Length: 500
Image 1 (tube, helix red, strand yellow):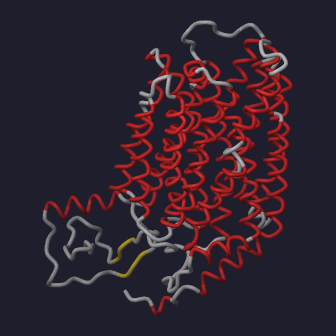
Image 2 (tube, one colour):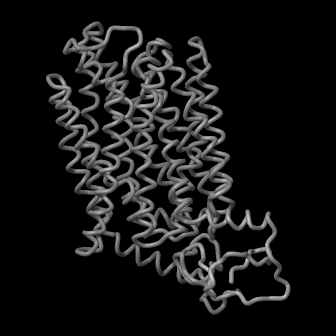
Image 3 (cartoon, one colour):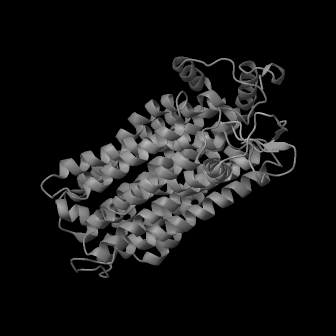
């Protein structure tokens, strides 16, 4: 027999005397009562709606929202050349767009992490999506005299998107456990490269289709509002830590205590530093590689000279980012699952090896780009695949070494540090270095190409440093995981004391 939460009997339910809970376990049957009554039409609709709020559906909707999150972020990069020409700004001025976005993102992340550990998470997520969607749509109408206002709008978008990135992984962490959680987090973090690639594709395609780059900023907001509505309706709000222990959490630590514990968690600290290296490289590549390849075509005298070009580099780079994201996350999850059979330190070790391998192919990009665009694309493909291997694995490391009641804070603070030390400054820093190198030969197309390439050569060195941090994470991973398990058992009631 199945019973709705308001005490009415649901018709057409399974005859089995058990009810499936959110986490997938089976609870004892609820006995028939004279107080029960057949469901009315409204109750049947509600029951059908609740059946749609499965963990898998919730993870799918949250992943869709993450795709839109990153698609909106990199739509601007897909029309970067047009924005630069429209507002007539330098390389460092263009780099400021991403820097302002990331700075506002990282400042807001700890605030949303605090709220996400204490209040209704899906409401915060939806409000964040609605906010950045409206701001993005409004920014498409800013005229060329107000570039500062366009930069400010990107900062406001960063605040809205930080709520999503800080909180949504913790909901998935409370819906699944073990290998299921690894798989679902892999799907969720697949949205990062997939959404980034679609952002380039959307930006370039919308610009060509409409004959105006402003239309690139008017598609993702509509999809974002749709995603926010789906989250409100279909995504549940699971109890924090419901799948990690059998009892109920009896104590909650303060924010200051949470921060002290995270600072002492060596696996968390080193994996956060490694994430910073990844963010540094991906932030710089995402902003500058399409423009770098466009300058390479100018050097090779194959560049477009029309007012509205097809943005081939943005399209190809977007497709490569989508495919490498899919391959990277799938290969990363499969490799980690296989290596866990050999060693319990598999998660950080896989990340370290992939980072070190990625650095080699990233270096080769700047060696072959002057002579062969195709060769540069091949190096980008392999380098990005290896770099994207660690997205979901890093999140899974956090889930293992941090207790459920401080995970949103941990995700938010990891996001803060990775952006602060990573892509908050890398696009602007690369632009500054490029501008400085161009001063001697400002009118030379070859030197504009070379100066940007020399500036981007900083990235492979940072990637190697990130690989070293993942190796350090492997040293402390098992000890920190065991500490987290002990802490969880200390703050929970045993099952026998839980009231049903």
